[in-house]
Length: 175
Image 1 (cartoon, rainbow, N blue to C red):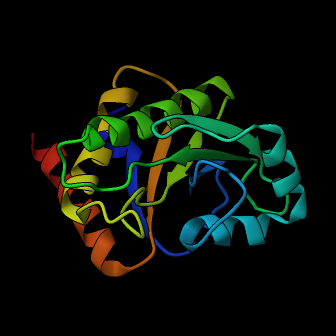
Image 2 (spheres, rainbow, N blue to C red):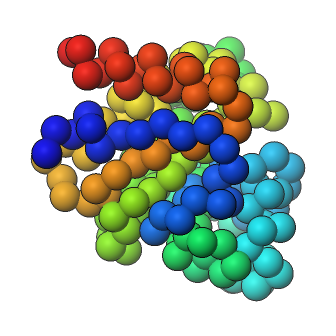
């Protein structure tokens, strides 16, 4: 199968996706917050916070996995993206590491389908076009020659973000 065909772009609510794992753009405490993080915690239910307390937080660029609880997804992979500080503080490497660490956990837990939000592009202010390029390139490199995950979905909150992802994926397909 063509690896590039394994990447999809979806506009909507990540908490509603029936995939094996959704990725949460978490904070280092893993105990919930605003944006995607808060929405995932609310939709999953109180058991998620209890399990997250047992994980003792997560470092920037790393990922941890929990059950999906009340979500259609079996698992939630929590990753902590970098806060944008101008680009000279290793932000690109840390953001790429979020995707790689999450995909390694997905593959290691037999997840055939995984959905990502636009990590670090909200309150962490990562420039959307750069973050999108890093996400698409990192995912494409990871799935090349691997069986799992079979499908990676970039789930965008709005159409403007989805269009950035569609352009980045289209550029891959031409390349």
